Amino acid sequence: MLASLTRVLVVGAILVAGMHLAAPLVNPVLVAFVISVIASPAVYRLEQRGLRRWMAALAVVGIFAGASLLLLAVLGVSLLQIDRALPAYHELLQEQLTLLDGMGPDFAGQLPGSSENVSLLPSIEAIIAGLAELAIDFLVTIIVTVFMLLEIAGLRQKLRTAPGGSTGFEGQFIAFCRSLNGYLGIRTRGSLVTGAVVAFLLWVMGIDAPVLWAILIVLFSYIPFLGLPIASVPPIGLAWLRYGLAGAVVVAGGIAVVDFLSRTLLTPHPAERELELSPLVIVLSVFFWLLVLGVPGLFLAVPLTLLVKAVLGAVDDTRWLAALMEPAEEGA
Image 1 (cartoon, rainbow, N blue to C red):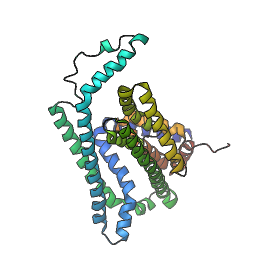
Image 2 (image 1 turned 90 degrees about the vertical axis):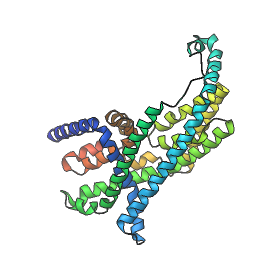
Image 3 (image 1 turned 135 degrees about the vertical axis):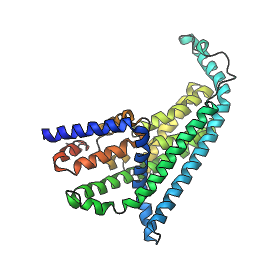
Image 4 (image 1 turned 90 degrees about the horizontal axis):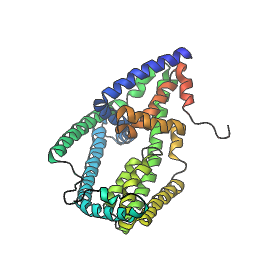
């Protein structure tokens, strides 16, 4: 057992170090792998209806690319709206901090005096450079996703030839795909309802760019336990600027109530149960992959941790490590 643990630690350290150093190149490939796992059932259904595999893969990837571009367009319009409103927010911030002057330091006096040139957007050069990098990563992700979808149908046959046969790598990979798709399915249903209701709440309250904050809530909900609190900070802050502490409390309470009701009424059980990972492992994995891969690691933490568990569970010498990652039985 000690020897197997040593080997796992050495190999794991080498892989993690390589992923950290090559994160800009590795991240698009990892994103493509996750997308291919999620999209493979749709490709299979299209194949069952008579489409050839390459046509089905291109159709699914085309839908994903179109939805991504539409999402980027909506985010861009919303950011422009927020950017135009920044001078007004600066004045509201001065007013709110002035109300706090009697309770502590002179916060308002520490702000810049002029709000005319306040802008959320970077320079034109920075925008062009960022768009070029985003376009390259997006193109790489799309190309790799297509080839992975073309190969994933034959992956099961390849895994049968690996040591352990159908009870080894193949069985663990199937369990990995089932757990990931089940988790994302439950999480998506709840987050879409939460985002829609929160957007309506923010629109009723007159908060700018409610669609932007709803999209952030949906996207960040894929970060277990931590995503919703992070995505809730901007709309709560804007509510505080416009309505003071009472507005912030209303938005925070509304988001919490809507999320609780969506998880309780629309999902059969917590999404994390599909992962068969202990809550501690899930939380630690988020911070770990953030350090290794940067911000994309926040969203890749669940798939990568599930994949690590599947690999460990496929080998007899490391199966006990996979068992340690599972949640404790209730009542044990």
